[in-house]
Length: 276
Image 1 (cartoon, rainbow, N blue to C red):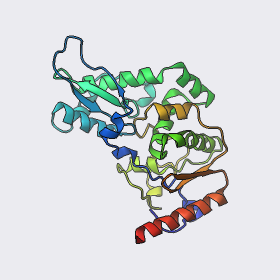
Image 2: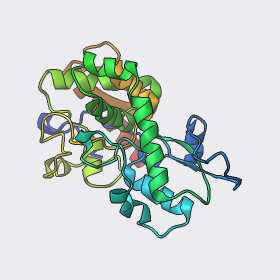
Image 3: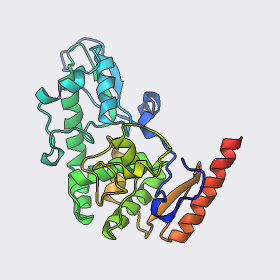
């Protein structure tokens, strides 16, 4: 993360401080939806597999491998034969549709069956009238709504901020502004970090929302229900920028000069933290 105010052309939109992609299962278990995965006549004692909100598909695959005690990479290799009921826009990529929940598993569970149940759960959660109506109001389809929710999941520091983050995304899309989300660059680079350099913002990737207009081609994580609610019903406002100046203090504004001042305060706090 830079320790000086960047030039206008390279200024960060978010400077996000949340690392949702390395959330622990214990944290997610408190709010995760429990989804039955066992057949009624299955007498084997299940084990719990918790998928936290905001995990990437690669993390889900690794967790399924571990839970089922199969060699690393087995779950990802099962994708072509899993017959997942994904929307056409997904192009066979389940990112965004491996619904975060706590899933009981048993000796009968396979990588394909676990993935199928996650996708089926996502389809049920995302097919409600409130989701489709919200997508229509925001002039996007359901798959795009899931993509927006995945960015909200990665960018918002708390559930209370999600509606405002959603509004920033829609406002920037409406104004023809690049989204400039560090979270999409992290996804392209397959990392989870708070530091995004000027060089990073120039990478050649469809997920580089600094260099490319519009939404990334797919979701960048698997969002939960709170992020989906924010994506379908964003908080009213004219905000175009936000920055977390310090933990618990995220500032939203429509004024670029005000945003610059907020970023300067963020940088000051960062330098102080580095010295200490």
